[in-house]
Length: 125
Image (cartoon, rainbow, N blue to C red):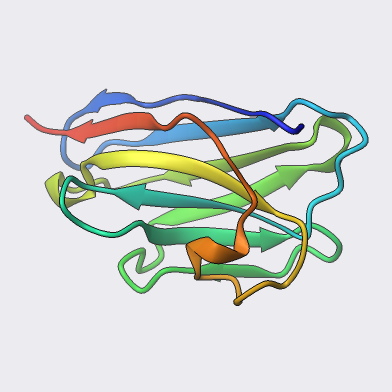
């Protein structure tokens, strides 16, 4: 079983930055996708960004608008999400996810087989 361990959430002022990290526990794990979703109470999980492990193809959710950057370190089996110009509406629990195949496409939570425990990001003055 693969475990995804997230870190990097917290409280930041509007306009600030945070960097989230997610490490997969098994060194031999080779995902198809890894990505970051976010969720606020009462709403569905919304994809912020995903990266295809084999070739680094990247997708971003429409709300990102150039503010977030996803990256990966294959040797460490780790994916990062650099979030800049944060807004109060970015406040959510952010989840790391990994999928073993194409599934239902990069933006569907159903495409991801493993999930982290979630890390709270709060943007407030």
